[in-house]
Image (cartoon, rainbow, N blue to C red; front, side, top):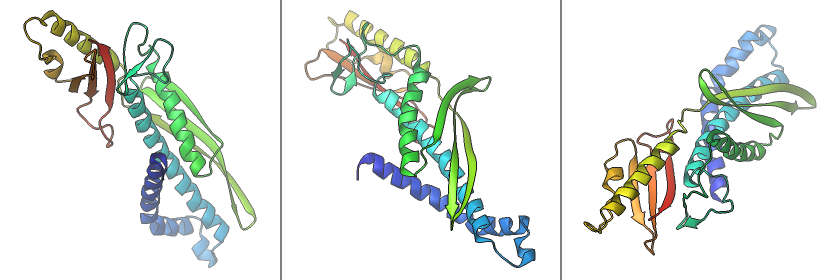
Length: 248
């Protein structure tokens, strides 16, 4: 099974485990609210549709959260780029930032392209294909909104409902410019002191307290390779890492 398949399987287990824990209590509540108990008869289709709707809504919420995290992680792994364009190159898996290859001013939109790729894979695996995604911003910040129509069929009876999730992204895309500024300053100061020390310490970055820095030279010592990682996990997941290289 590939990594995406493993991730999907793990997500499905988490979703189902959380759903099953509250299933019995929710079942009794549905029966009581619809007064099925008073009638003394359980319409199976009604109960099935009510529980399936809750399960799918819960799955969509978790799929959005996982897709957002994975999109941020991929954006960072690729130095803020969606794909390598003309003038770009990789050195030891790191995108090299130069005047001809740098992340754009539309990082939120590029994040959303990654998000759509991830989210579509999850809903497709679950058999939900008619979902639409949008990227917006309001006074509360950037958010992803997904919605779609779901049709359930049980013993020849059909039931349709709309599932809609609004998810605010807790991430500052200005981090990319901050990290670029730190890294360029580190390389410049190291080059200014090249006659004094040839240890390539890049101390300004290593002493920076806003991110955790990993710095190394490539095999041919032509590029400085950086990994700048956030200090806190993203909403319970792992820390977001931004990887890139700069000409030495």
